[in-house]
Image (cartoon, rainbow, N blue to C red):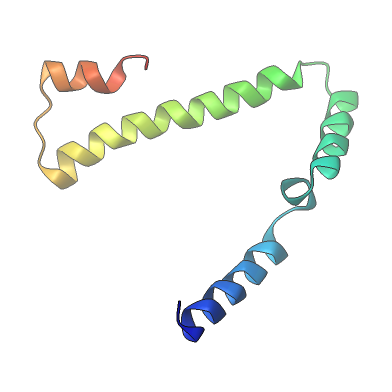
Length: 88
């Protein structure tokens, strides 16, 4: 790997670390954050987290179908639609 590439990745890594929250970087900080949230809300926070991750994943699959149709010229065939929406 060239010196320029190494410097780029080092600089980028430093940037990402600076803009990333502590709970995203450190497991203990994440645990504390989850405990704080748990104290403030009566809802089950594990279900909220699961729902958010699930919605993000499912919407990503839908976006993939739209991308293939509009940007890659793929037809929306019944078989294609079924394959894209089925539970894997």
